[in-house]
Length: 156
Image (cartoon, rainbow, N blue to C red; front, top):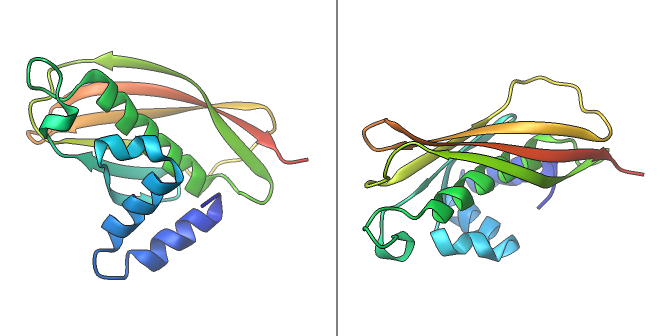
């Protein structure tokens, strides 16, 4: 899955029964490490991706809350899927360059991530695109933020 084709695949697959689940599994097949958090992608469109991770033992830390690195994984997944679906794949490519995070509260419930950038926009060569990602608990409290820098370049 790459570029605009990701959005086309999303639109086609999510019309099927269990389409969101199937798409989420395909993303984890393409990038296996994300499978460790079992993400479920809720919504994908130009400039936007949201996904949820359920509170379960495999993502816990020693105090029974969702581990900090699991939160980072969810943030990177959302930002990456959104950028992959948004950046024009015929002319540009991208790679994560850095991430700054803030842990604002313990995550003691399922957690939902939202990655969003303003659209429409121009794409440039050698651009640092900062993607803000916010994570919320089921009480709609902001528990984590990340600014993920994606390096965008033109294809040669």
